Length: 441
Image (cartoon, rainbow, N blue to C red; front, side, top):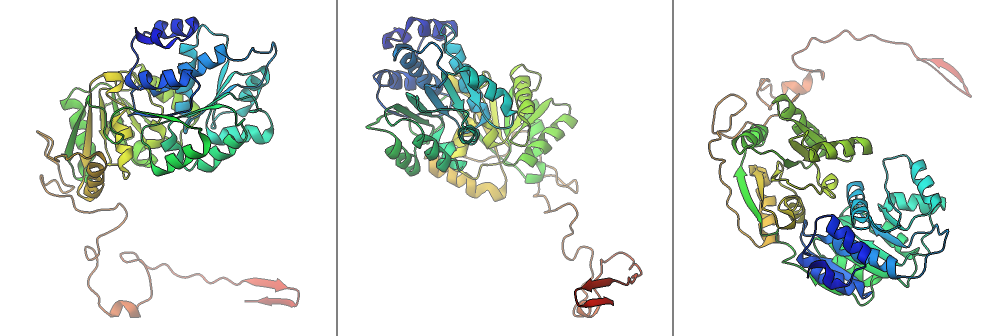
């Protein structure tokens, strides 16, 4: 029966069919029906299993069948909170897709862009607001948005919301909306903190869970390869070429690292772009669109920026750095193998990252073998193959490499930089004054 079994409005079913969807995913099958009945929902499923439609479809149906809409209404009736701009845009796209035959107006509110455009759209009247907590609070303080008519509230990616420190902002926003409402909370993982938050904002929620919370979807094949930290970029290039990868998401732990990886891939002739929070919203959108359209073969992203990346056809996810938090690993590799498709996840593991590897094994309940990548021989800085690279930091020297052991004599000498001639010291006269007089020094 597909989506027709839920009793969704004809306009919504038209939107779903026009988008090319015929069969609901497991999380949709479990969550949509009780949500349509008006129940509060806690939904837990791995990344890439269709959680967005699981709350967007009931939300649209509630607005269609709810109270009559005033002719010149301006106040939103549905609110979706997301942790990142990309995810807010993704939810807005889903609302536009499934609600294309409905007269509703939706807006995505987030930082990093000029607020004036948002103000103009809000002044015309909006049905659905999809927002990041910080920018929504800005509008609330400016009194440019009224949340007193909210009928449905959704917290999407609630676990990431807590990780990013938005919990206090979320509570402030929840206090500003009516207590008589339907609330849905969706997350890839459910922690004690999530349960505590849910207990405070949901009423007798129905919990729907698909799969084990800490295990990636079964369609993802996971590989772990040993790598010297200094040779990871060479291994990345070798892997991209050896496996003929065409649409690859590479994860870096830091923004600086993402830029560096993208730059070095470009020098190797591999089209790539970096995506992280230091990019302007325009740059982030162009990067994502370029990746979707195939202009960039590789998208290098940080964990925060990657939330909301929903790109069909990502064949591989590569963890250039092992994440420090095990659940980030599950979120990362969930960018491939989406909606039942097959995908591959590759992780490069340096010696000092083994402890994080152990955390992933403990979190997922799985045991992984770390092995050398077939056909790849790492090269040390001195050109010798097959041995661990010598620790090196640019601009610093290993103690003893350039200095003679001078013993106690060094203490008696004036401090100066070794290897350079001492510059003659120029003495300056200084003049100071205060209320009591003046003096030369």
